[in-house]
Length: 205
Image 1 (cartoon, rainbow, N blue to C red):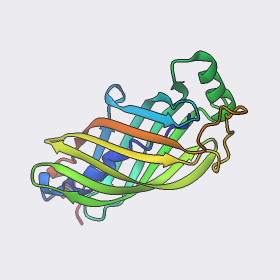
Image 2 (spheres, rainbow, N blue to C red):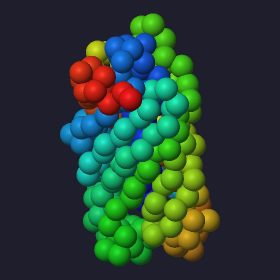
Image 3 (cartoon, one colour):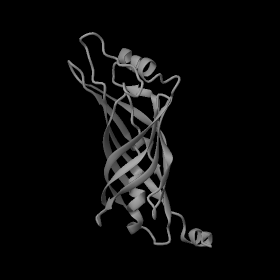
Image 4 (cartoon, rainbow, N blue to C red):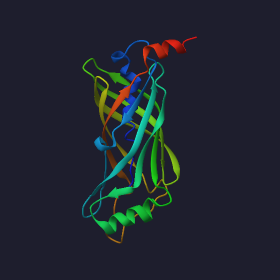
């Protein structure tokens, strides 16, 4: 019911530490996430059972400075795409909890990443940024794990969203109560492009 497309976000991490895998002249990289290969899942515990669902990634582009770890760009999730498989529940989530008609996008804007890239391409890092959901901005930090092979990246992360504390409606009904916190799992794939050496060289003073 709340999506943390920060997801995505995951990507940034690799860019900030992939300098071992690219030419020394490259100062930055750009990651394009593949919506068809990105899965944003959520799990909301409840008294009788847990609700599982997913959201769709609209698009995601992340730029990272390899020297400083600074990052920019955005990962955008379609708030109207929330799907648990039950129409009435999905309509309530989209209309009354997320108010998706008024706030159609959930956006994660990465700012910085710190972590470690192993020689075999495995990595883990801590990524921070700003998540905009339901019209409000929230700073979040997530642990990201994944692997980079050539210019291709795969990554995954998990985090929790205290949606009620963040101003969204509690959908609990009488004894059918649900948690005030939703669990988010994101898995994504993308491709990194690096600036051409001659272009980088021409930009040097």
